[in-house]
Image 1 (tube, rainbow, N blue to C red):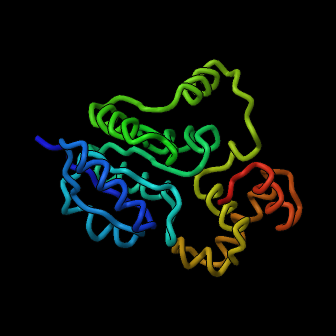
Image 2 (tube, rainbow, N blue to C red):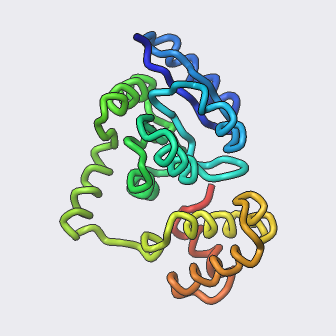
Length: 211
């Protein structure tokens, strides 16, 4: 039977390209697609999806929140994160949040197919570099950055602040109050040992945490 794949990416051209790759290869059926968190939630529950191919950056919520939603509500669905972000900066966080694989959007079509098949079978799919990072982390030898200590929500608030969004905008997108976002900002500053929003922006840029 064909593997049922649901695609979440806010770029129509990207979704079109993924559909084309999977249709050309055969053995896959697109069970649905969405360009936002809201659209995803409304469509996914009826899709009987086996593998979710997920972009980590969405206009209304972040991919890590979708990972948690799938983990809590559809635990049998495997998730492959397909992102433009460098693997060494985001893969481990995605895997901690429930993803079974992480693939950069620059990967070849054959690698995408292999990753989906591997993830469907319940195996982890990451690059050789990320495998090395995971081994070093398990051995306690991986050099951690200050933002590794941030919780997922704090990490996303950091990225959204660095992208120029206000506390009001962030709160609206995340379904949280302005006061809550302000509290998160204070925690982030404390954990990163920074003082101002400008420091946060500079930190995120220096560590390539924003698009």
